[in-house]
Length: 98
Image (cartoon, rainbow, N blue to C red; front, side, top):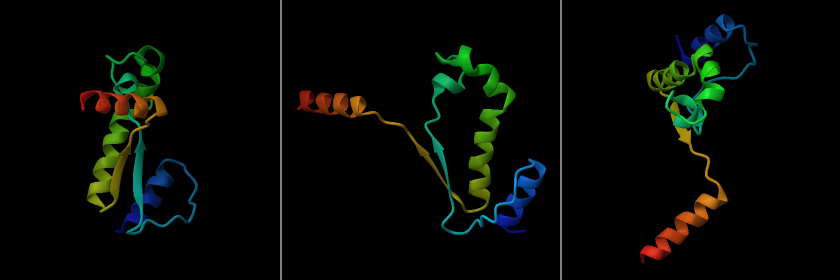
């Protein structure tokens, strides 16, 4: 069974629409900015989001994305969000050290 067939079966069981999207060698999974502050009981935002993280099985679902990507030859990328302040502070620190 190919990746597209697996995806269609997953969509069907999750009651998601079949969009015609085909998984091929150009397909990738991008996980945007998973932060411990939101995903960990020790995180500062856990009080606000922890119940949702648990109810939606977020951690296991992220792990599943990595596993399925690996099993099906799909590249998985993690993209951190970087603000302009982070860039400026990092640049200033680098300049200060030199």
